Amino acid sequence: MNPTVTPAPGLLLPTADLPPSFRWGVATSSYQIEGAVAEDGRTPSIWDTFCRMPGAVVGGDNGDVACDHYHRMPQDVALIKSLGVDTYRFSVAWPRVQPGGRGPANQAGLAFYDRLTDRLLAEGIDPWVTLYHWDLPQELEDAGGWPNRDTAYRFADYAMLVFDKLSDRVDNWTTLNEPWCSAWLGYYVGVHAPGRKNFDDAIAAVHHLLLGHGLATQRMRAAATREMKFGITLNMGTADPATDTAADRDAARRADGMGLRIYLDPLRKGSYPADMVEDLAARGTAFPVQDGDLEVISTPFDVLGVNFYFGQDFSGTDEQGNTHDADGHPVVRAILPAGPRTAMDWPITAERFTQLLVRLHRDYPGLPMVITENGAAFDDSADADGNVADEDRTSYLAEHIAAVAAAREQGADVRGYFAWSLMDNFEWAEGYAKRFGIVHVDYETQVRTPKQSALWYRDTISRVRGS
Ligand code: IFM
Image (tube, rainbow, N blue to C red; front, side, top):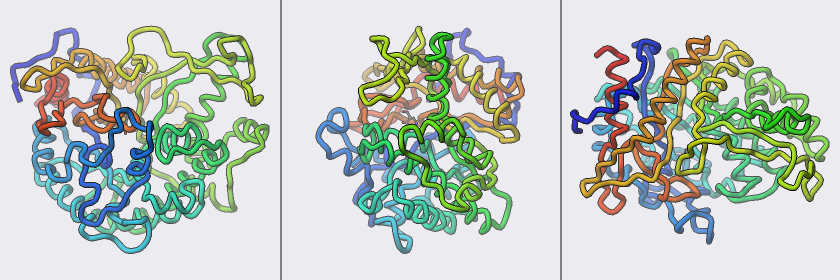
């Protein structure tokens, strides 16, 4: 990398606010970077299927090749090393390790993660494993997917296959990445795999994802022969009322309930929030809780992974002033705060990041947090050599890392930060059109080129460490 590129002075952080022990990382996920979807025994996941549905993904893109990381892993680990991070968060592809989602491990698939782990450790980089970042084996979806209770048990079995192989070297284990996306976007809104649109199914999926997390955590903890950190990653924003009307306040309550509290309350308090249970009952549905489930779900864990991108305001009326939609359900309308947006059209709301972290510390105390994802897509323009002067992304990272430092000052126990993402990759329904990487990928040649943000990140880490 070119060490002479330095960010504008205004972007330098007050690094004194972050201790040298703070964990710094970059993150990716299997389907978004690996490619090699039919190699070494891997079978299709719901994303392989979804990508083939006409109109599901921008440009008809898919993860067949993605960043070809499966074949370029050693070079990619060297790239990670060059960024000066201490940790790499990656996910394991379930259908690679356990084709079809049942039965014994596929050793050829597991071997890839075994090699990756060894390579990271050889470079002095701590591996941080996410067990599920959305690539459910298609056969399990055919059997009902996450709305089917059995999937939770299948997930715990699969988790143990990975744990048995890697736990002699891996200390940090995240069960699920963003169950809200799996349940809400996958089973209700239908914009993510498997593309179903059924509210009751989404509610059942929430419960079974949480159950799977609890079952896997219990089994991994019981099998651990040394101290390890287990956790779950949730994507969370802030939900403020657009105005002080009762309707807007109620819309914000509902949004916060569906986005945050229906996950964290059962995980940390052992119960679903009473107001959400009432709202669901009014809609004729309920979480499919069986005896003992909430004890399993609230199994203690060690670290909450926080993925933050932006906060929103909510209104209880639609643009015509109606308080109920055509189906008679209360309106919960997101209003994006004014100000600059990213290429995803997401608002840039760093101050709400601080607000969220302080709130999590207050409402769910005693739980260390790590920012397992934060970053932004922008319409990068690369020069002929792939260089990208992404001041917008650099500013975004600087403001959000400063927001983490501000939250720590207010008592939030945040112990690390992972930039999303290591490199440009398959951005789900947006295909390759949106670039989140701090490293540019030329998808024709697979050449990786660190952007200005990557160099800034490297320099920032070095300054915080005092190295
Ligand atoms: O790319 C995704 C990632 O897979 C999950 N969290 C949000 C990112 C940006 O949309």
